[in-house]
Picture 1 (cartoon, rainbow, N blue to C red):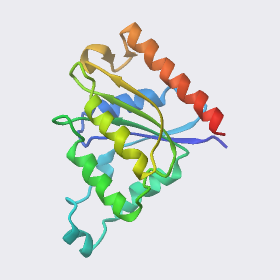
Picture 2 (cartoon, one colour):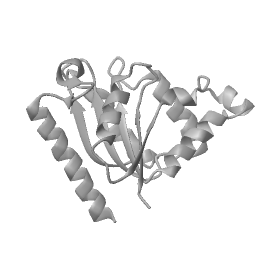
Picture 3 (tube, helix red, strand yellow):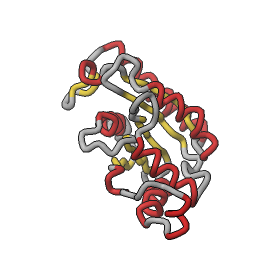
Picture 4 (spheres, rainbow, N blue to C red):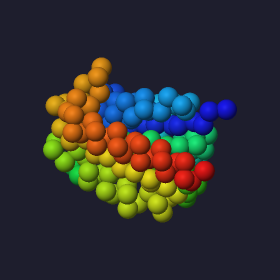
Amino acid sequence: MKKKIIGFGASISTTSINKAFAAYALGFFPEYEVELVDLNDFEVPVFSVDCEKENCPQAVRDFLDKLKSADILVCSMAEHNRNWTVGFKNLFDWCSRLDLKLLQHKPMLLLSTSPGGYGGQNSLNIAKTIFPAFGGNILTTFALPKFHENFDPTQGIREETLLAAFKKQVEDFKNQLIKEN
């Protein structure tokens, strides 16, 4: 039975470049069963303690079940104003109320991209700091700068140096997976 990888972009944008980048990354794992998850399928109200007392939305349980069903996670962090997107942060907050270790200690390839030259590294760096406290087992990271210049929807990363660096991170990730097993 193949191991399962769940991938997602940490954004609720219908044209999310981080979802596209996560989908691209999943293509480097043909030996696994892969599933790209759309956070729009897990719509939840804005988190508040008052709302939590009323009822936890089923979408929160559904997203946690998705994470639990995976052996490996691929997450591409989107960035708004040098921070996580509100949609992802909201779902993350809800999930953490049901399961503090929501990332389930699953091996994780953590990515980011943005239209700018820093490649969403602010949100990636926040995730690198925060995720371990929530069961994140980050093995490798990669930030792709200037998404629209360096990525093509049909061919993927088009700049050779960035493509080589990305492939190296994926290979390092796979090697670490072997060591963990």
